[in-house]
Length: 194
Image 1 (cartoon, one colour):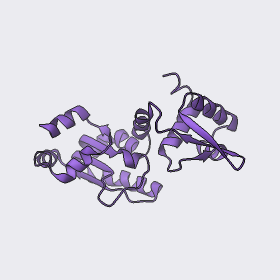
Image 2: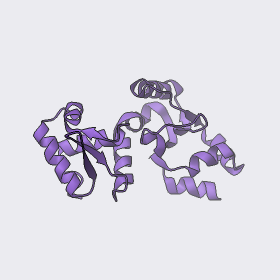
Image 3: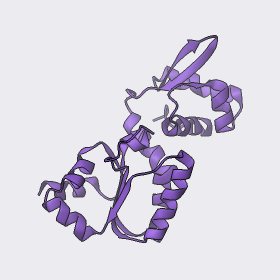
């Protein structure tokens, strides 16, 4: 665990790597985006490279860094970052004002800023939802990402009905890699299997 959370600079760098669409980043660009001293950023990048979190390569006399998706804690780090920043963090932070949410599920593809198709669902929220509050959070994230977010919401009764009927829409969401923002994944999957 010492290799993960030792400084605020590392936390900022992790957030940058795991929420950015850019695969490769130059140190100076990273310094500007995390608003920290260049030597602190370089020091953290060297430590992260030593632990196998990032890799670097030289291009035209410039060193670029990339977060390694094969890093052993990548899925967990991605979930940590998504649950504390952006749309995922907003949903968790504003859970009380969003109504009574049973499940909030985000597609890993969306969390990684990968392109989604027209049929893909980026976010599913199940429960008694205060729709204007959810729409406001989604609209804020859409303006930041400058692209439309495909999201769906439904009450628990409709969700359970669609699960029992083996609805392809719901099964498609539940069979893709996902991050549980709110709710118990074991309980969710027990309902699906039954």
